[in-house]
Length: 501
Image (cartoon, rainbow, N blue to C red; front, side, top):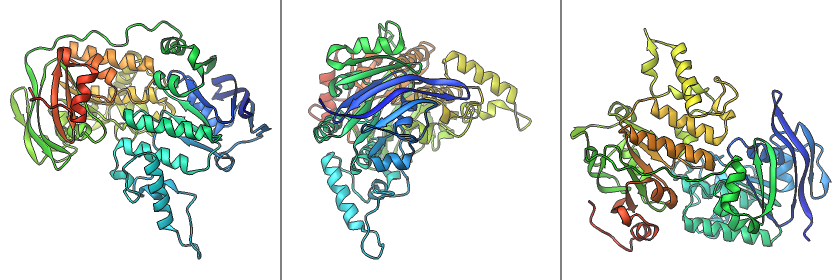
């Protein structure tokens, strides 16, 4: 049996007298791929931050390689070979890929000059290993969300890690990229690297992990061999109740057209896109990385300048040259990268919720704070936003609750059309069901929804019709019995192309 690498003994953590992690004892062996699952707020991130030295435990002991660690800190963790791939990106946007990967561990020539050629070559090798077509000298700010995730993975692998902690590493990756990552994880495991894998994708946990620990409300629920527990049982233990139907019933839309896009193009990323969206419809958009789905959404709402094409809402042409124009035209947008473009994490809840709709709260050029707080309380109750207080900064909330705030911020503009870009990225199964129910309620009220997702199960389960994109074009719009995995992937990979209806 492999020797123990990391062990916790009755570890607990409190913040301002509130216990967020209680009596957690684990023992993880060298070379093991160990899963941790739980809802947002279950204590997973707190446990990670204790292991990598960001937090100090309130109670309990931490052991690494058989030795008790009196006090862990991030610098000591790095020296000991502990690396973390965070759920939210920790990259410097204005630096390039190789500068980010070797930040703090730069290779030098004689005379203290940086050996840029060596770092570029090593970065190129890492990208080849990950089968990621990302130039080493590309600026981080110019990369897609999926490419940024691959850089985070490469950055962690570049360290000679003994313990690699992965927090939701596959939320924006394609099936092929996930397969490559899993092959790399198995190879690292064979070389004796221990991996802690945290994910809301229970199918992946069952596939890649040998054992899985379930947390709920900061407490230990159970530890199981993954070949002895089903995904359904894992989900039930996470939430503490029986979970039945994941997706609400798909209701037929009205025949009235809410929005029509004609010949929309944006440089080389969006090419002559045509589609219509019915009132009360959920129109799904699926495509592999680089298909142009996010770029299309950003062109519609004016983040990107369209080079040709028109947008009609309610049968009338509209000029949308900025996100403000989109809001004024009744379009709301929930972005894919919530932390960089969806919310301000160092601001409190009311400031985030009224960020776009602030005009509604102005009285004689002053903000009506009483009304702002009342609306925030209403949303906290309605969407079950878990927060220490109404004035808490968003950085103190879990990923799922941050996503709810981002969603509410867009909803407060009272839109007629709502564009969701990967709305369930990085949130747990219960929070996903909340999002699905919310979207279903929106369309029931007559709001039209564009639903962008990389999860085929979500696309198939939620949508009235599905537009499939490839290389900036719509290769087909599917409906009825055509909405199945085989047909969607045919169009996404270019094996079949049908006329767009």
